[in-house]
Length: 150
Image 1 (cartoon, one colour):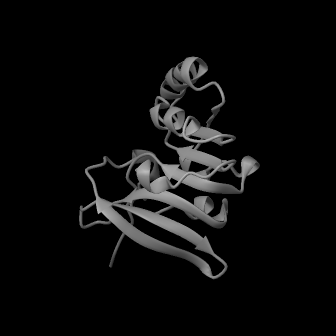
Image 2: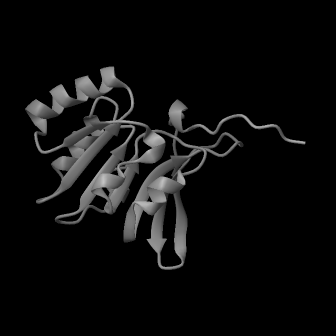
């Protein structure tokens, strides 16, 4: 997933579902002047991530909160990486993406095949490009609530 991020100098990056911070730490070392924000909803994982990043990637900014909301306070982002599979990208994350920005996300529709995709925000909305299949577990918090279907 890191290879398809196409990191550029000075970009603002949001890692959603940052877990213990491994991906956020790697991203923070990939280019000069990157501004990396890590968002995690699980306090225990976020504490581990903060400790890891304190030592290895001190420039990563950590936040705890609902993943589905993203981090609007720091938007817009040039790159958003969702570190876990989702059924669909939450609308709030698309809104926090700068024009021309991209989301890298493993998307797993109901069919069960997870495809890492690049979604680019355009003036008309967004355009998705499937890149490769991967075995990535679903982020439980971003799974849609069950709904009655008639």
